[in-house]
Image (cartoon, rainbow, N blue to C red; front, side, top):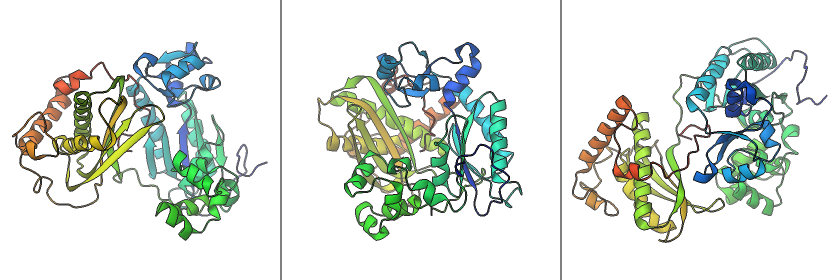
Amino acid sequence: MNATEDTSFAPLAWEGPAIGLMDLDAFFASVEELDHPEWRGKPIIVGGSAERRGVVSTASYEARKYGVHSAMPSYQAKRLCPHAIWTHGHYARYREMSDQVMAIILDETPLLEQVSIDEAFFDVTPGRYSKESPLDICRRIQRRVAELGITCSIGLGVNKTVAKIASERQKPRGLTVVLPGMEGSFLAPLPVRSMSGIGKATESRLTELGIRTLGDLARQDPKRMEQVFGVFGPRMVARAAGQERSRVRAVDEPDEVKSVSNERTFAKDLTTKDEMRAAIDHVSALVGTRLRRKGLTGSQVTLKLKFDYQHTHTAQRQLPHRTDDEHIFGAVAQDLLKQIWSEGTPVRLVGVAVSSFDHDLGEQLSLFADTVQDAPEDTSQPNVPLRDLRKLSVTTDEVRKRFGSDALSYGRDLRFKDGTSDTMPTGKFDSQ
């Protein structure tokens, strides 16, 4: 029996931290199956339409047999599995089911850190809130989730990195346990891409250095890796060796938001400066609403443009002061446009993000220009005081909160009302 693959472990005398990662199996598709029993056993795809440049949010395991996977363009998924059952999804229903699952985990421990609608870390270290074996607790969580009509896979280890990788080893309905002291042998043979935070670019650079497995990475000199990857380098080495020290926040602790962003994929490529400016205004307004709802102000602005499925460009700028006003950071995003785009180049996706919330840079408007005409590019509302424009945004937020998101719309919003992809959220919180 492989000591890291659980089927029937005897009770364990677990020593040290015990952190689990619960991942709901094909969550959106599973909920659709639950609500439509006649769909059971058939390929199900939750995602946007191929005609509006949608992408796959979730595919059932029956659909995955045909090569369909999350984030795949809908037109490609439709070609691979033309007979699949398609649905755009029902996010409120998924949220309802997610809340029930999280309540089950909270029955076991208050140390729950939800990272998406279908995924959460939890701490069941013996002696903190229970004397039970962490394995027994994980089994009970799985059983109770199954009673809801859906399933989950769980990885259990001494830190978040191990738990995350373990949760992906056996799906669906898997329970993979990495016993304390076995982190190194469990991680060593796995490819570097198995570890979260290592994308294609980092993997390519590691391969150039002769580093292909987590074992290879764990043997590297942290100082050498820092020279190549900066502060991320030594962290990668420690995580690959299973030496990460993780902390799962209690459910009532404030979440550490790193950025607030929004992006839109457009059914028709944007090619003119007028279209691009309108799109940035539209997306910036969505980000401003989220910032004010979360009570956050940030000082770094990022503009993201996707030209096709393979090519994405970004540009960033640091502001002198924090803000939650789209009339300020949106104007900066407009100015960043010239760094990464030339008129006539087709753009399929526009994204705007605001980050750097942890620096006290003073009162958000004190050193900014008094009027929009002094912002880094002209705007459609010259000579209007910025404070008045922010008040207008706040009023708009209040009207929409009270009467619905369609109660008040600007021209920038109406312009793209039917021109964006109909793909629903893919599960990650908007602040990630």
